[in-house]
Amino acid sequence: MSANRINLCKVIEFPVVADYRGNLTFIEENRHVPFEIKRVYYLYDVPTGATRGGHAHIELEQVIIALSGSFEVIIDDCYTRKRIFLNRPHYGLYISPGIWRELVNFSSNSVALVLASMPYDEKDYIRDYETFKKMVRERFWDESDRRVAEKISKIKNKALQITKKEGQL
Ligand code: TYD
Image (cartoon, rainbow, N blue to C red; front, side, top):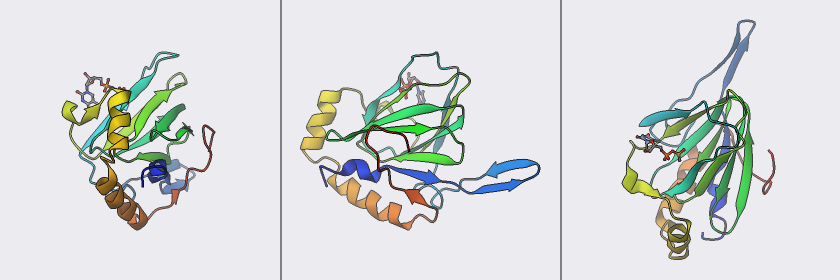
C-alpha cells in the first residue's frame, strides 16, 4: 500500500436538504465522515497568498470543508501530489493519517472548516518533509492504511474518488 496511499483521501459529498428557505447540510460522525468528531476548528481571515498546513499527522484523520469561498488543498503521499479545489459547503475532503497537506489560494472571505478525529496534540504533527518521507519509506502507516480502507468502504454517503492529479474536481 505504499505507492497509492493518496487514494485513501476522498472527496465526500454530504446530504443537502434544499427548499425555498435555502439549503441545509448535516454531518454525523461515523456516518458521513469515517471517524468520531473530537474537534472542530476553522481558518478564516486568511490573507491573500498565505499557505496553511505544511505538515502530516501520525494518527489524526480530518475532513476539510470550504464552508465559504474557496481554496485548494494539496495532498501528497510522497509519490503522488494532488491539488483539490474546494468551493462548496456540501463537499469535504477526507485526509487519512500520513498524508502531507498544504492549503493554498484562499479566496477573500473564505472559511475552511476542519473536522478532526482527535483533540489537538502537537506530538501527532510531522512538520518536516524529510522526516515524513523517511516514515513513508519505512511503511509507518501500513497498518493504519488497512484500517482506513476498511472504514471508508463502510461510510454511508458517497465518497468520490479523486481522479485528477494536480487538477480540479
Ligand atoms: P498550525 O498547525 O500552524 O495551523 P495550520 O494547520 O494552518 O498549519 O497551528 C497554528 C497554531 O494554533 C499552533 O500554535 C497550534 C495552535 N492550534 C491549537 O492550539 N489547536 C488546534 O486545534 C490547532 C489546529 C492549532
